[in-house]
Image 1 (cartoon, rainbow, N blue to C red):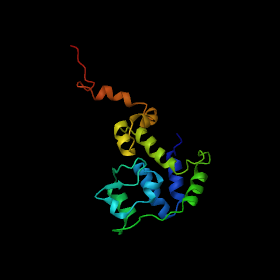
Image 2: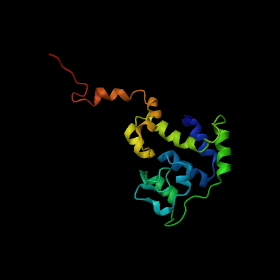
Image 3: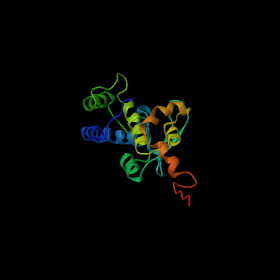
Image 4: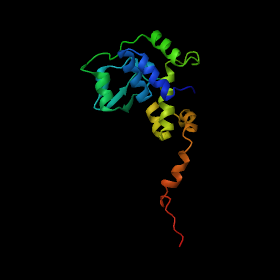
Length: 167
């Protein structure tokens, strides 16, 4: 799964216009698919949450977002579509940032980037499954290898919390 590195994320965000950047920030913060984010209406962003309705499996998905992101993407809009972004132009910019993107995966790289960094930053695989809206944990497990220390929780989350005294 191809994902953007932190320097590539910075380069992408610096290469986008304001509308494109808001959409990219939403995808990178929530793992939203392009279509879910692009079709988002203002009334679906509410009290620190985004309600995705047009999901791949047809189920509604609610993902928390920061107050700062909510203000940024919603602005003063109360109703109506939030984004007006040229998909083809967005893909061209992505290909400049990451030239080796697999064909047809241009905008999906934002979703993979969210999931990959979520795990690399210590995220929980079950939480990731729910955020991404995967019906099976097997779909989500492709990201598990990116959290090389996830088994280390066996030390800190056991009832003894790593505090062992024999004598």
